[in-house]
Image 1 (cartoon, helix red, strand yellow):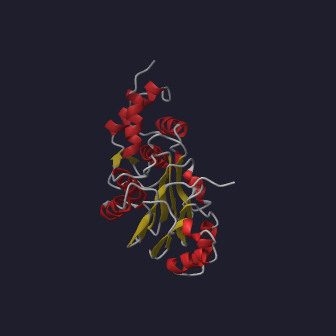
Image 2 (cartoon, one colour):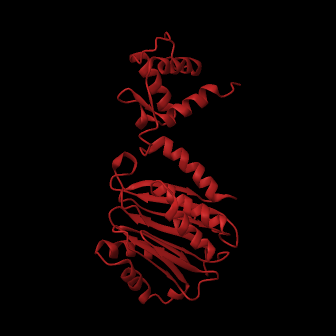
Image 3 (cartoon, helix red, strand yellow):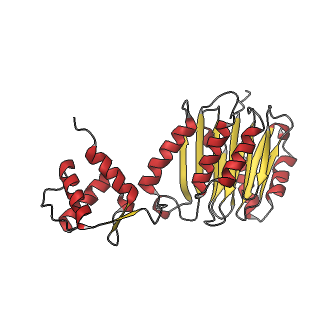
Length: 295
């Protein structure tokens, strides 16, 4: 039985500062994150799409691990593939070398742009402006890899995106021991499987994932635990039902226990106050909860 062919635009990229590798993708296809993105920390990343050959993911990473250039990886992947003309693939390695392939039978508009530390590719697009817009956004956006990958997706959609519409999106970024508990390399793995505006939803979910799990805060975005701030925390924790002591302004054991109980309820255990400071993002979440209307 013939399989549906996802119309897709994606970017594979490398951050030379952090050594992170990642893939971001959007498609008029359900659960695109289960098909297109493949990545391994210290090795590379692959986006396989159009009439996707999912074997390109693990095979491509294995070839990258052997030290092959991404151009040679693509040549190996497509050489004996009878359906290579319907495939599209982007590959990047852990040195920032990138390559992309668009088969001659990919549905129009189909093509790619390869630049320093990235490759953008897409098929069934509104036009070439989609991948060019993605490339410009990736190159010009300030921030770490997930920020730049999301910027590329937004730019691609703004330029017309997938001409059949939108449905799903995914963001994967890998780093050594970056996963939950440090037990794998899946630093970021966020997916939106079916949504009318999946890139916006992906960004919203990523922001929650970020404030909850990731230690990628701006070092300047911290709040000192001054007596006045501690009193603010004590008042808020009292209102939320976690604290029943005096408004002493001291971050003592009862106050610390109450704040940690609140943090635990919100899955913020890895962002507890340290060295007399707390994350600015956690403070903002706390304030918003304290000030939320009560039923």
